[in-house]
Amino acid sequence: MTELTRLTRELRDAGETALVPFLTAGYPDLETSRRLIAETAAAGCRILEIGVPFSDPVADGPAIQLASSKALAAGMTLGKALDLAAEARREHDLRVVLMGYLNPVLAYGPEKFAKACAAAGVAGVIVPDLPLEEAAGLRAVLAAGGVSLVDLVAPTSGDDRLAAYGASATGFLYLVSTTGVTGAGLGADIQSYVERVRRHTEVPLFVGFGISSPAAAAEVGAVADGAVVGSALLRLVDEAGDPDAAVAAVGAFLRETRAALAD
Image (cartoon, rainbow, N blue to C red; front, side, top):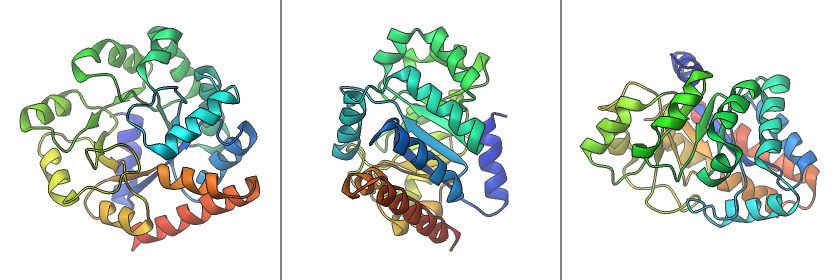
């Protein structure tokens, strides 16, 4: 059993849905990024998704695109994002899932990347533009270091496709709630979607891409094992007047959302 699966099941046995914040590495700046990571742990979150900025984030909506652009302009790299992940694990005991696109991984070198993830204590990796049929190589080198390659499942996926994902899934499966990009809003009929995917796998199911409020997270938490919140947090950071306000806003949102999930 992988680290992510074990932790999620421990939370579920305790009656808790995993709340997974998404933060873009280096946004709005490196020091505030560190403070935001610390705040997610202080708010009670156990798993954190850290986005590696990329110049062509095809799965991401405006909020994450803006964050990626600003982080890249400030000098954020895949290597520095791995350093942040290592800090998050070492200093805050967060299980980090690193989300990044394939091009930087290939440029870094898949085997070198896998070893760096293991050394940093990264628990999982999401590569949204890596098709299932081409993922076996990266999945294997990551697994050798105890790191899960987490697959994205679309609401349009048929049963044969879901069975293929279920057969290879480790850590958890990430259910994209809508056919749009991140932040586009929660898709319709989450319950039947989760139930359909659950027939094909025993790994935990997390839902993301559109959870913009505590109420939406609670809707997801009623049927899924985890809720991923990204664009809503990055919008709070963008709208904050200064780093202190950004950290406070993110912390308040996460605490309110955890309370909604508990209810």
